[in-house]
Structures are given as C-alpha cells and as structure tokens.
Amino acid sequence: MDSVTKRYPDGTVAVDHLSLEIPDRAITVLVGPSGCGKTTTLRMINRMVEPTEGTILLDGDDLGRQPVTTLRRSMGYVIQNAGLFQHRTILDNIATVPRMIGWGKQKSRERAAELMERVGLDASLGKRYPYQLSGGQQQRVGVARALAADPPVLLMDEPFSAVDPVVRKGLQDELLRIQDELGKTIVFVTHDIDEAIKLGTMVAVMRTGGRLAQFAPPAELLSDPADEFVEDFLGADRGIRRLSFFPSAGLELTRGPVVRADAAGAPPAAAGAPYLLVTDADDRPLGWARPEDLTAGSVDAARLLSHGRPFVPGTDSLRAALDCAVLSPAGWAVAVNDGGRVTGVVSQQTIAEAIRAAHDRTAAQETPGAGSADVTKVAP
Amino acid sequence: MNVLNFVNAFFSDSAHWHGYDGIPQRLLEHVQYTLMALGLATAIGLPIGLLTGHTGRGGNAVAFVATAARALPSFGLLVLIAVVVGIGLLPVMVPLVILAIPPILVTTYEAVRSVDPSPVDAARGMGMHEAGILFRVELPVALPLVLSGLRSAAIQVVSTATIAAYVSLGGIGRYIIDGLYQRDYEKVVGGATLVAALALVTLGLFWAAGRFAVSPGVRRR
Ligand SMILES: Nc1ncnc2c1ncn2[C@@H]1O[C@H](COP(=O)(O)OP(=O)(O)OP(=O)(O)O)[C@@H](O)[C@H]1O
Ligand SMILES: [Mg+2]
Image (cartoon, rainbow over all chains, first blue to last red; front, side, top):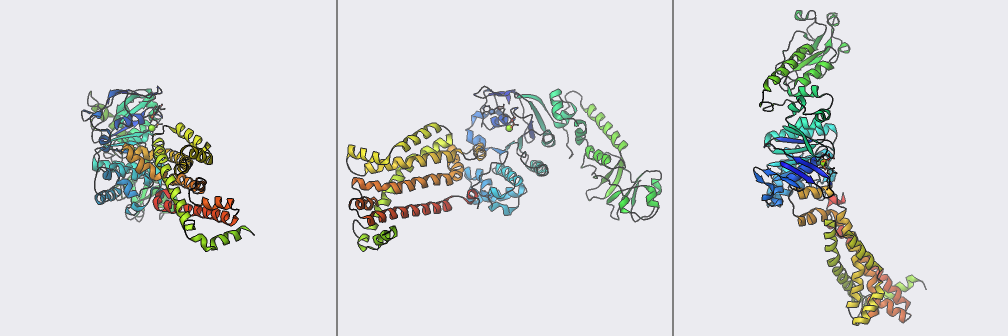
C-alpha cells in the first residue's frame, strides 16, 4: 500500500496516507483503537472500499487491473459474527466459492468436508444450519468458507471478537496451526493488542485519524515502541509480555530439591533447601513441602503447597517459566517434559539471570539493519 | 330463516352446480381473474421491490406509490374505466392490479432491506455478483416476508374480484349482485360463503408454499 488515503463522502478521513508492505505467507495484524480505520484499510485490499488517493499493489500489479470479482475470489474474507448464509447448510456455506467458480457439486462438497476437518469441526455438523451452531463453531465455518477455494490471501476483520476468551484462544491456536500448514498471506484486523502480539508476524499499530503509528514484528513493538501512543496502547505489562519471545530452553534446571513421595526422607543433595518438590512414583509433580515435614514421616498431601503451572522447557517461553515461579509459594518453577514428568526445578534468581542474558543477546543483535529479522516466536 | 339455512339451501340446490351460472364455472372464472391480476401485480411489484430493497434506493418513491395506490377506490376506478373504454376485462383488471401492487411492493422492499447485512457483506467480499447476492443470499432469507406480502395481496384480490360482476363479467360476484337484484338472499349468502372459502384455500396454498420454498435454516425448524 503506497500512501493510501480514504476520505468518505461525508468528509471523514478514515485512512490517511498509509504506506504498508504486507509480507507474503505471513500474518500481518492491523491493530488500533476503535474508529482508527482498520476495517477501511482491510476493505480497500479487496476493493469493497475504493481508495481516494494512493495505490495498492498486489505482487507488483495495481489491484484495479483485474475485474473486482476475480480479485475477491482470490482472497478469502472472514468477518465478525461470521456472516453465514442462514438458509444454507454448513457444507453448502463452505462450498459457496467453489460452486461460484464452477466446481461440480460433488467436488465442492468433498472440499467442504475436508475443510471442516481442517478447522476442527465435527463432520456431523455439515448437515446443520447456522442457527444450530454456537458462535465459536460459526466462526470456524466462516474461516473454512474463506479457505474453500484455496485463495492465496486471507482477509480477516475481527473474526474472533464475538466469542468468549476460552473459545477465542482455541480459534487463535487453530489459526496459527492452519497458517503453519497452509502458509497463506493473512491480513488480520483486531483491536485487541494481545491477539495482535500472539498472531502477528508483523503488527501495524494505527492511531485515530487513520495514520500508521508503528509497523514492526511484535517483539520489537514490545521492546521499542515508536512513541508514547504505541507504548500506551501496549499496556502496562509489556515488559512481562515481551518475555513471551524469549525461549526457556537455556534455563539451567536442578533436580536437587526433587523427592519422590515413596522415597522416605530428604535426599542429601537437598540439604539446606527451604522447600522440596514432592513427586509421585511416575515423577509427576504433587507439590512443595518443607523438609522437616517430610523427614517427620509419610507425606501428608494436605501439607503440600501448590506448585503452580509447570512449564515445558523448549516449548514454553521465559514468561511461562517466570509465571510458574511467581505462582509457587516456594518461588521455584517446575519444569516438566511433554509427558508431564518433572525434569527439574529452577529458581526465580536463575530465571532473572536468563532474562538479563536474553536482553543482552537481543541488544547485541540490534546492530543497525538487523533489528527486525528472524524473530522466532515461542508460545507464551 | 338463518344464514346457515341459506347456505344449506344454496349448496344443496342441484341447479347451482351446472351450466354457465353453475358454481364450478363461476369459481373457475373467479380464480382466473384472481390469478391474472395477481400475476400482473407480481410482475410489476416484485422486481421493483427486489431492486429497491437490494440497492436501498427509491424507498421514498416506493412508499409514495404504495400510499397513492391504496388511496384509489377499486370500485370507483372500475366505473371510471368502464365509462372510458367500455365494458370488458380491462376495467376489472386495472383496479385489481392496483389493489395488489402495494402489499407486494412494500413488503418485498422491506423484506429485502431488512436482511442481515453481514452475510451480504460476506457474499460481496467473496466475489459474488450483485444478482447472485440478491437471488441467492437476500431473497431466500427474505422469502417468508415476501410470501406474506403476496398472500395479503392474493386475499384482497380474491375478495375484491367480485366487482367483475358489475361490468357484466362472471366470477362469484355474479351470485352476490344477481342475488341482490333478485332479492334472492340465498344466492347472496351462498356467493359470500364461496368467496370466504376461496380465501381460506388461498391461505392454505401460501402456507404450503412457505413450507416447501423456505429453507429450514430460515424457518428455524
Ligand atoms: N461508509 C462510511 N461513511 C462515512 N464514514 C465512515 C464509513 N465507514 C467508516 N467511516 C468512518 O471512518 C472511520 C474509520 O472507520 P473503520 O470502520 O475503518 O474503523 P475501525 O478501525 O475498523 O473501527 P472498529 O475497531 O470500531 O471496527 C470512522 O471514523 C468511521 O466513522
Ligand atoms: Mg472495524
């Protein structure tokens, strides 16, 4: 998008000289306060809205070079509340674009069934009508319908904003998984900065009046907000959120204060530790206990202190590790492997050192010109 | 003598079941007038209603035309046209068509306009042509209301088509008018009963059409 402006007939300037280079096969998120022109920007990409000034190029060609319906058929479009056709079954809803571009009925239906599976919908829902589905399921149908003809581009306007936080998280994870598999070019509009940071490869923060405040990968947004507006918009705990981008793989774990419930007494290695982590015979964490309570006899489950939510080194981020340490009264985080068995514990101090080291590493990387490249993302 | 006796006498008189003034013949004529008027009114009102409803433009004009048409008295129009062009089908059809257009036009316009905008937006965004949006997205959802407009037009035409008898045409109106002239109240009541029965049949037909044509996803059953 090159210096694109949209002025509505009533004089409202919704988008003001916006220039953006949207990367291929990645998720670009447009985020900003209500009324800042996100929807208008998105709808200029499929020409539901025509820009007043400026040009939009798609792979180097002006958008206007092909008929508008051809353009739109090459872009999936997902809106808030899904916008399903209530007179059509779920399968027929999803098969809309394939049917429109002349696929046979059978082939379209098969494709629709395949997509239902891809977005995590049970095949038995295919014969139902939209009113028989929950909001979250409808939203999945909306995504499936947009993907049906395998368009290279996907435009999504606050697709998950009408569902509850748990369902939203599920939909977000699903989108990331689908994106991993299909590698679409996605432009995603939201007013939720957490959603932007979670989903975006690149995030464009817009300010009221339709101007671009910052266009950067989420990690850079969190570490270097361009100005006060962006900083405010990111919210108070951006330091903590930034930890989502630091891997927990390098943390040094210790098995010292870990004891099995069936092995009586504290292991000698744990001498002096204020708390011991008790595990069951399968190495699954049970909770923290004081050494004197343990040596006194058998484990009394009631005396165990909560161990917080364990983290998986390598998969989870430093944010998850820190969260676990802060949650546990002992001040230690419990590390487990994929199977949920304890691999060790780590203290707040060790995590704090890891955070400092990670900051030093990114500072070193941010030599001029190398700033934004190759940020690997870890699940928060 | 009460009304039921009239009805009974009218329908049990075998002379009323044969010939050019028999019930089958008069019913057939009545149905013909009705279908013709309804067909013409639909051909005019439905496309205009669909188009104005889809574009959202011309709403004021639709409301104006409908109000003006409703203000015209059917019987007065019949007499006026009969005086101008003479007796025939035309003086009957014009008032009936004008009577039927407003409910069809206004309900169709409102029905299409009140369709939830988000599926329409989604359809347009996926590259559907405007005609496709109107006929495959808006109309199926607006159909119950559109049908209800057609239904009230049909009921009004069924009962008003009796005026055809005033210009020497047939239809059930013959019994009512002839009956009044001949002071044969059995005939008048019998004719009125036939009109009422035809109206009920019309209701039944529209109910069946709704069951058949409206998607279960719209009916929510
Ligand atoms: N059709 C229109 N005519 C006139 N003004 C419009 C029109 N559509 C949007 N606007 C105005 O343009 C501005 C940007 O609107 P837009 O819908 O792009 O905002 P948004 O960022 O998507 O907001 P939200 O988060 O609330 O959806 C707003 O001030 C809005 O009132
Ligand atoms: Mg919006």
